Structure formats: structure tokens, C-alpha cells
Length: 149
Image 1 (cartoon, rainbow, N blue to C red):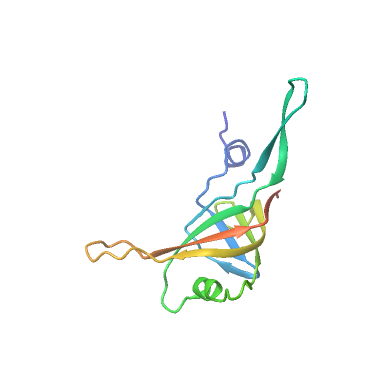
Image 2: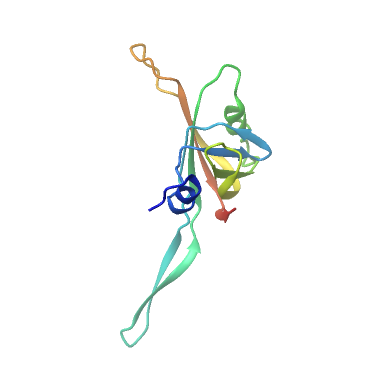
């Protein structure tokens, strides 16, 4: 049984609450990241004698969802999705890293290639609630790779 902090850090899974996100060269704060999936299509092949084979096909596109609080004067995500015109959009590489409790040491990083926004959802407004305004951006990307530090 792990008893010291270093033993616990090396034998327990990494908690998900401490992470950093960088869109291109700009670091941004998000409260939720989902969709860091690596998936492949499945190809089925049947030959003439009754054998049936399944094998991996092409890699599927990645759909990532990022949620962040709305702050006065902060419009980077709106500006990014609003820049789409005539099939031209600035694609960005994104890094999402889990860190230690202090936030100084990277433990695991997902590298997302050529991401671009496909939707930006405004927060739900409710006069009877005291929740913070949170917007959601959905991105499509070419691929995700994982790097351990």
C-alpha cells in the first residue's frame, strides 16, 4: 500500500481536474475538455470461400468540445469561428496537458493537429439562476497523438 506522496503519485491514476490548454501559441483556460478520441473505421472483407475478415481502415476525424466561462471583453473563440469565410479558416494545433497538483510539471499531453471550429454555443441565460455563463466550442481536427512526459 502506498503511504508517501511520491508512492501515491506513481501508483494512482492522474486526476483530471488540473490541465492546461494551448490553442496555437495562446494559452487559454477551459473548465471542460472532451472528445480526445482516436478512432478508426473498420473494413470488412469476405473472400470467396466463406472467410470473413475485419481490419482497421482510415482514421476518423476528431471532434473535440471545449467549455469555458464567458468573460467581459474576451472574444477569441467568437473571432476564430467568425473568421470562417468561403471555405477558409485558420487551423490551429492544440495541446492539452494534464499536470501535477501544482500545475508546473506536465504529466501527459494530447497534441491535436489542424483543429478548426465547427460550432460555438452561447450560454443558456436564466434570470432565476446564479450559475456562471459558460460557452462551448466544438472543433474538428485531423488527428490526436498522446505524449507521456
